[in-house]
Length: 519
Image 1 (cartoon, one colour):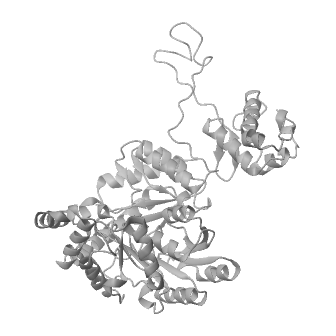
Image 2 (cartoon, helix red, strand yellow):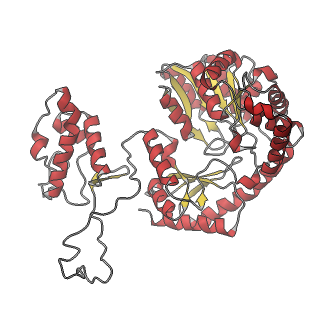
Image 3 (cartoon, one colour):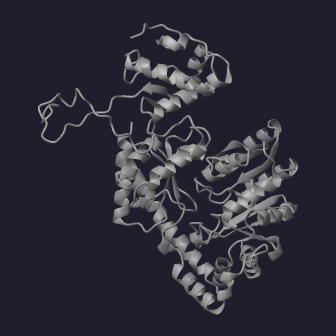
């Protein structure tokens, strides 16, 4: 072992650690591999013991005269090989050796064939399906998590963004689709064009009038889900390099979208019962340059599930007006109140076209339709142009089916039943979490939507918990996805939009037991 008191926390840096890398391009391209090779050699020579902490990224970079990115790539490479392990909020450590399993019939590590014991000729351990790398981007973490949750069937996919299929009016929609296809089969052989089926936009305008939106059909643009609505809205009001204010925690798909568009996300705290901190917003707008838009979900925010009070909605609108910004309002969960009352969007108070309103049928009516809509205010013409050049139009059949379902009066009773089901399930799920999860777990019960946002007692890591849960046939969404930082590492989002059964409570109990055993 190396002597204590070394400036890098008790570690000497032998071999190549004392050699300055040549600044040529070819050397810089491979310097992380050279560094990784030396670290691995030092581990093999027992200069670092299993479980021992390695030098921090910044300390190693300073000692070698290389960039932080080079050391990050070095550690990332070693972690992928299983040589080192990242520990949340602690650093990099030498991986502990995996236990060796004896072959059937063997005793005390002896080889049944009479040869050397299994301990003496240990076989390489089978790596876990996914190693979560905390040194990489949110997009890469999303790819890793997608691989984890799709590599085997899950009995309880509590990470998905939809309710149980039985909670949607699937049979009624199917009957309408069959009738339309029999009477108008030519719609399958025609390219859909324009801003959306006129019949659907008329029905949407009438429905939105019931909760305070005074919009004409030609002020609506039908999109391929709310994702496209948000995408064309952001492209209409920003350019690469601009900054966009978002809530924190925030829907991870929005963070991915901002990154793909070359935009900077400014995360501001979102408080249960209050929404985005408007004090923090005022401060950010006064001290941050390049802000062009605010994206917010005032009604049943994902993942908190809370509603911003009307006084805060009006104040938010005043702030974006004062600072000449766009407010992109995501209202996809607005119809999913746990009471008969449907809260008003900020758009209801907009008199100057500052709010770009985005809605969707994917949560409330039919996830497979992938139909969304937006009203762009002063940017509407620009958004229509962007939509036309991106995907041309939304599919006609789904639009026609939805328009007919709304025209027949089916939407209101369906939403009433859906809200009643959510209101019945949510308190039972919250109570089950309080009963079965570790002491100290905090439950944020929503006022709408279908999430429970849980804060686990530290040091429980929801990423580690997810790996164990998937092995038991369960999945949820870890908090690490809801920010570009690691501040929600001990949080998780749980989808509870399904009939409450004894089997579901058993799944929650099993997940709570796993949480109690996660270091």
